Image (tube, rainbow, N blue to C red):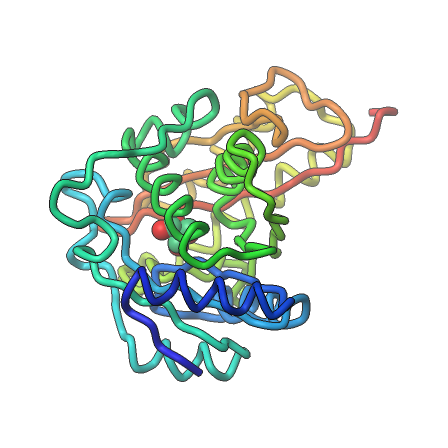
Length: 286
Ligand code: PAF
């Protein structure tokens, strides 16, 4: 496995791989790997000749007062897990390499990026999309693998790929969960033992939405109320939002429509902000 830190070197290496007719799969990450990340690496491994895993805690997607400084980092551990998962190249630039002095160009997503995560974290998706565009230019992938846990990020990146004519297939991998349903996340580390005990309520709340929809409930308001009721059992948490959106547009809906609705939640437990979502199949019969 190679480790590349320079943007120029990454780009010329990717160009050589492409010219030799090999397919590149990129897995963009901020490191501190858990099974969610390694599942993305394995998916890229199955579909491509060369897997590039990027590790970069992107300052541009953190707002003032957010957890950029505290964000967990462990390069040696990540290196071992990346290699075990089948990574060929780790691209791990530092902030100066990605944003050199004088950097002044950002890619700003519009509609759908200003609600939910975008409302709570106003410059977040501008930072995400900008870094993803840069990572795509540097790693020249045929496919890019992202996790469904960040459903709004998937929406924003998919639309950017389409709008900016990137010739890249986006592969979305399912959320990996702990046994009790809590979605794996590097930020779970911030939870105290008491908060960790309550955290599975996020998934239980989402499953409640799924059950209601399966019983025929179509009113988003009723689904949101049922999800909020379950979340209120988490005494140490406050909900940032509970939303029912059309996953194609990321607009909030009044009613669930076939084929799919997405229920998304964000909850704060002290310093930990957790997000999760569930895609619900909506049949036309109701
Ligand atoms: O999902 C993440 O870890 C980050 O948002 C990403 C896509 C690596 C961009 O920094």
